[in-house]
Image 1 (tube, rainbow, N blue to C red):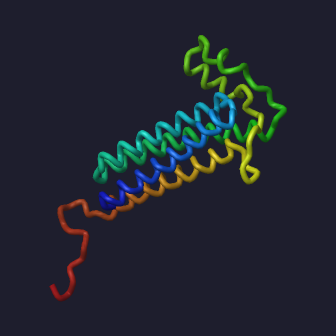
Image 2 (cartoon, one colour; image 1 turned 135 degrees about the horizontal axis):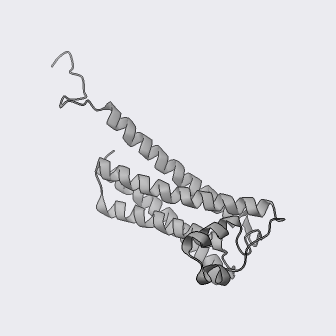
Image 3 (cartoon, rainbow, N blue to C red; image 1 turned 120 degrees about the vertical axis):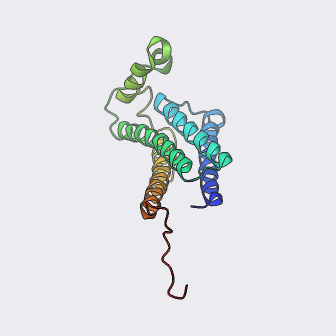
Amino acid sequence: MSLACSRSLFFMAFTAGALALGVSYYLEYVVGLKPCGLCLLQRTCLALLMIVCVVASVHGPRRFGSFVYWLLGVCASLGGTVTAWRQVLLQSDPQQLCSPNLEELFGGLPWACTVQRLFEAAGDCAEISWTLFDLSIPEWSLLFFVAMLILGLYQLLRHVWIACQQPLSGESSHRALAGD
């Protein structure tokens, strides 16, 4: 993969993440929707993905660095996918009880316990307050994270494939033509 192609892919992923984060802030501050704990975890994963992508696009890494950046991006996307999937499941079964509000959750508990309680259920997590084309916000978030996950996994597999095609010795991987 050439340097420009790697940089442009990272920059496009950053731009898509910035647009998604901008929409979430628009829905919070202009429309007036209050985010639940799982929404905040999804924003955190999105922010991590954006940081990885913008650093990678500025850095312009070679093969190994690009592999590491894509691996970090896949980890952030996987975290967002799991979080969004959990919220979609909670919204599909509104009978599940939600845990206390965010102030009580983040009050004095350690982070590990807070995240565990958020995955059990989050305050107002099962409420569908806004839809676009009959998809709720967590469903849109899930689609975005799955798309970023597919892009990252494709790039990782592409790097592995290219690395496997190179010979272990110092020889060229191109076969000599008969006329050479």
